[in-house]
Image (spheres, rainbow, N blue to C red):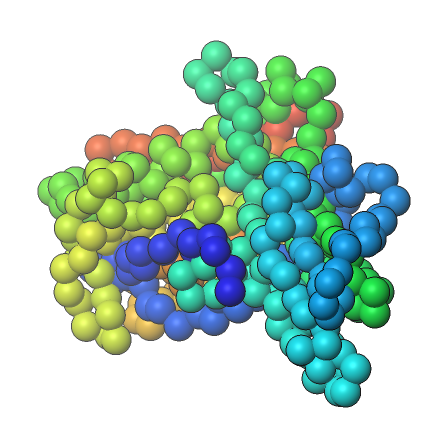
Length: 332
């Protein structure tokens, strides 16, 4: 049906102290629902929508077109799909197709993409990430239904959301530490500590703009040997086992305790099945790539920067912003 391949997510459970993460999340979640309102359509969608008539020798066909490449990615025969005999079933078929195009299925990649937030390099210059991209499913369904009687081409409605900060703020975002949290670990646990170091580096100097959604799994990426992650203890079903990437949850939990001092809204957060030693009970945020994530939204009107310091036996995460934004960003 779809000809694109879904990027295979290698799910790695992480260990915290002597404890790690659990896996139980349903990933069938629409980014469209998570990130309302949609902000900016892709360039091709800024002009009025037209349904180009496709010459037909047989039944009318609806061709779904990628607005970026202009390629036809799917062809529908409304007559064969029940448009004339069972409109309700036909609409359900179209809604399922829109869902698959947006979110992907099995080994097929969807159009929806979480935002990869920008970051600062060592010289304070911006390293661009990528905007959030959303396929608005309800709009695509409406367009297909409108074109079903006569046939034609329908472009996929894709919307982009850029990070919510101004480049004029960049020189000042490191002025003041508005929140900080430190956790400690055993310096002798070399594999586990390497995993903490790598994950902390992956979120260092990330800019979280106003309204931005931060996803730990998106920013850190796969925890596997190819990315330098080491075997370390982790917990699965309340049993401690060895797994690649154990210790990652110490980074995500330290981050939670830092940003929890700010004006943020939690989109996704999970607890470990057992108590952990480096944060108080209930103050953790377990993660596992491909399933459990730690996600929050900056609900303040100002941006901030995440900065990490990895030491011999500690991890500190500071949240910095411009001095003029301190009162706005912190909790009242």
